[in-house]
Length: 487
Image (cartoon, rainbow, N blue to C red; front, side, top):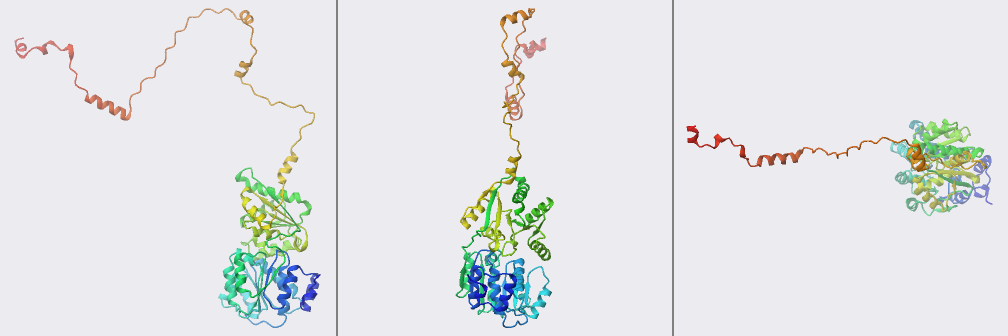
């Protein structure tokens, strides 16, 4: 079995490794450190949680032990996609360079430019930065990259997702052509393959695990949940999450709850805290000081539940995370591998649970296709609890027939017929009554015409011929003029 002492690392670096308690390198470390010490470019492909950070930190420290830094010209450069990952790389350098006099600077957002400028002006051996903040310092004329001897790109696939590829290409063009490049990623998308072919020279390809594979030590399951009503889905989904946490019991010592949106991170964290769970949110909209405080509290064990967006999904080394809850099914299948990689690290056992709604079916299928396996379905703990709480019918209780309400009409139809003789005896003789007149059918009065019909009627009256007086003509009118004068 390979040991760190077999990797030709410097004695002071080996002493620092011994102080941390590590003895055996992981496969990615055993495969990447020897070619890196030889000065070759390295293309490392490994799933998250396999020790990629130490795979480039250890050889860099050994090679940088000789020489000294110059002002504004760092000797090595490490690019990380997020502030948290960059801070973690800086912690690894502090841990493994304890016995060496190496200087470093951390360039991330949310920190004063003035403090970072002071570190760069003194000269640093290792410059750890996010792409955006690094270019800000360069464009302000505070930084030169012509002295970079070793360049590391960590979590390259996350760089692609966050849109940093143009920045990465620009940074590559600012560094010397003779630099040594160490390129690490969990997946190899076509765009990343293009960059490696462009900027890496005959790299040593180290692939220790199938791309986009989940650790075998992680127990995965998914709860398929359908809300009773669309407007209640968010509330009922939070109820399912709490029920899943309760179902895990004492085995859930701490957990990361991943959400797709920052607003949901805040809402879920507030909901858990309201129901008595020790939870806090972490996402990109928080101040850097707050993000650092929350993350450190979770690492120290002072915080049980960390509600996070994908800012915490990539590359963060948080030991002893027992559970990962995917409150939302990630929209990118690769993010699922990185999320559940926060648990089951360094060969430990871990549990990853996920809540899936009917609208998540497409994304869930993409995840199962990527990892080449079907995620086991688990029972909804709320449904199981409801069935268990329902009272069971007594064994000797008589079966009740459903009551059927009867109307007066139905009672009349179903009543028992009375015998004719009884009717004759019981009914008194009634006086003959006058035969009522037959009712005449009511006729509806004719309605007067309206609108166009009324106009047609009036027009017809105007066109009728004039009618004479007929037989009632007075006799004096029939007399001639002479007769009327005589009379």
